[in-house]
Amino acid sequence: MISRNGSPRFFSALCMSLFLMLLPGSAFSFTVVIDAGHGGAEKGAVHGDLVEKDLCLAVARGVRAHLVKRPGMRVVMTREDDATLSWEERGRIIEEADPDLIVSLHFNTDIFMLAETRGLEIYYPADDFGRPSKEAIALFDRNNRSFAFGKFLRDRYLRSPLFSEWKHDLNLFSQRDLKIFRLTAAPIVLLEIAYLTSADDRARICNGQFFDDMARFIAAVIVEWAAKK
Image (cartoon, rainbow, N blue to C red):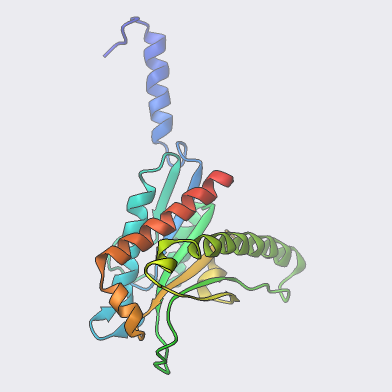
């Protein structure tokens, strides 16, 4: 339909604007990759009926559902279903997304089955100065930005209802040399959301409200972080 002012030029400009908005990334100011750990043949941790790959995907979908409501937020999932992904495939998805941030979601087990081992863990990449200097400097910057986001998330977690009302502990905030960290030069953190071997954590995991609260919290922190960039 031609606009009320009857101007073909106005109509053409409007069409072009709409077209540009539909181009990948053109309408977005912040891209985040949500990585649901494992998938398909890679089950991850298993405890009874609880399977890590399914839990990761459930939280990832919840985070995405909250993020896509936010203007300017582009969300890329490494997997949308129960797919088996090689590390090369996961890395390709991340690279093609060209993200501002990556959040990888996992669940944990304690091989010693210690009751006190429970809660959320936050990991960011460890420095590696064994690499060539140019590469090491670039990754050092990536690691600093990853640490900054991890600390940002940690500080807000300690003031969140997940910590104060759900009594879901913060078990660890630390550097790690994890395989997924080697796939990207973008800022990245990995969250071990809960321990399948903890009875307290399992009680929360089996509560749908906890899952929604966790997904809502992660999304809110990402949105707040994106607004600062």
